[in-house]
Image (cartoon, rainbow, N blue to C red; front, side, top):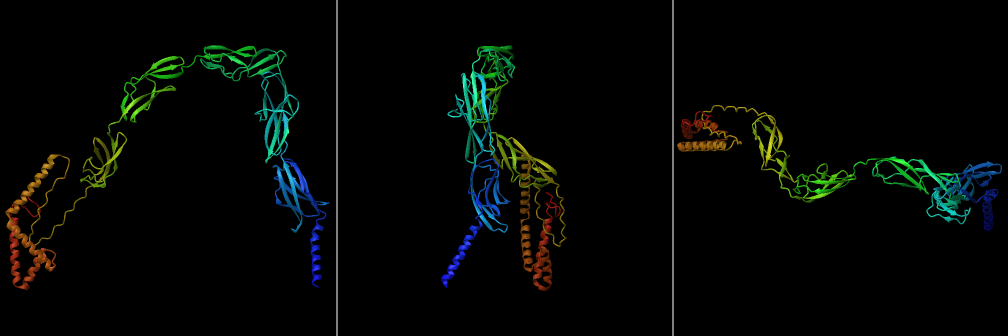
Length: 582
C-alpha cells in the first residue's frame, strides 16, 4: 500500500516538473546578441514568447537602451532598442511575465558594444615649392562622443601600409617638410577610445609635391604692422608679406623665410628696409624718429658728506652726486633722485638705495645707538577719585602715565609727575595738565558746585556752664605758593601751642580740680544710668531730699565746680563760649 502511494506521488511530481517545459516549448531565445557600434541606433530582437511582457531583472543594460515588448501574430516579441553610447560587454537577464505577475520565461543575453569608427575628411593634395610652409590635416568625428587621438605617417608610395611614423605628429594637422624636391604621401591613423575600448581607422593619403621653380622677382604684398620707430629700435617684421613670382607664372605669397636689413634702426628720418628672398630683393620705407633719452645706468660719483648717524635720524643727502648714463650720453646730478630708507631706525651698517628713473645704486652709512629720551606721555589710567566739588583738592591716587621713549620703548609711571591745578576752585568741566620730565598731557574732570553748610542747632541752656573745647586752628590748605605759606602755618601752630601751655600753667590747680570733679560726676551718672552730667546733677538733688547726709556732700561739690567755671570764664583768653580771642 505504501509503495503504491509513493509511486503515485512520484508520477505527480514528474508531471508538475514537465509542465513549465511544455509552456516554454514555443519560445525563441537568443543568448548572444553580437557586436554593435556605440552611437548607432539599436533595434535588436532579444527573444519571442507566446505572451507576456519582458523586463530586465539582472545585469546591466547599455546606457541609452531599454527593453520593449510588441505583441505580434507570432507572439510577444521582446526588443532591445536605443542608442548605446558607452563601449563594453553587457550581460543581462530578462524576465517575461503575464499581467498577473506570473513568470513565463527567463532570457539571459550578452551584447558587445564597440567604439564607433571615426568618420574622416582629409585636406586636398598640395603642390608647392622648396621652403614653402605646407600643412595637411584630417577632420574626424564620432557618433559616440569618444576621445580621438592621431598618429601621422609618411611614405614615398601612395599606400597606407608600411608608412613611417612621424615623431611628435599626434595632432589633427601636420606641417610637412618642403626642404627637398619630390613627392611624398601622408596619412593619419585616427583612434576612437570609448570606455577603455578603442577602434582605429586610417585616412586616405594626401599627396605633397615639392618643386623648384625659377624665382623671377619679389615685391611687398603687405607692409609690416609697425611703420614708425625711434632711433635705436629693432625692426619688427610682424605682418610683412612678399609676393614671389616664378618663371612658370606662379605667384606665391611668402610670410616667412626672407631676410631684412638693417634690423637696428640707428638713423633718424625715412629709412629703406631691404627684403631678400632666394637672391631677389625689394624694399619698403619706415619712419625713424629721434629716440627719447633713456637712462641705462647710474653710479655714485661722490657719497653724501654725512655718513654717520644715530638711530632715528633722517638721512642727509647733501654732497651726494650721481652720474647718469643714457642712450644719448652721460651727465651728473645732485638732485632729482630718491633714497630709501629716509629714516635710519636700525643700529649698525645700513644700506641706502638710490633711485633715478628706473635704475638704482646704493651706498652704506653707519648708524649708532640713539640716546634714549622721552618722546611723549599720556594718561593710561585715570585717578581713582573722579568726583569733586568746588574747593576740593585734586587726588592723583591711582593715576598711571604711559611714557614713550624716542626708541619706541614704553614704560608706566605712577609717581614723579605733577598736576596743575591742584585746587579745584571752579565748577564745571576742568582740564588738568600733567607734567613729567618736561613733557605734558591733559585730562578732564567735572567739578560740581560746593555743598552749602547748614549751621548746627544750638543746645538748650543748661544750669551748669561747661568749659568749651579749645577750637582747632584753621590750618591753611597746602598749595604751591611756596615756602612763605609753610612758614606761616608753622608759626601759627607754635603760637597755639604756646597759648595752650600758658593757660595750663596759669590755672593748673583749677583745671586739675575741674577734671577731678568732672570725672566724679560722670562716674555717678554711669552708676545711675543717666545719659549726661546735667541729669546726674538733677538726680543728686532729688536723692538729697531722701538720702540725708549724702546730699550735703554733693551740693558742696557742685558749688566748687561752679566757682571753677566762673574763674575759668574770667580768663582774658575767652571772649564768649564759642569764639576765642586769639
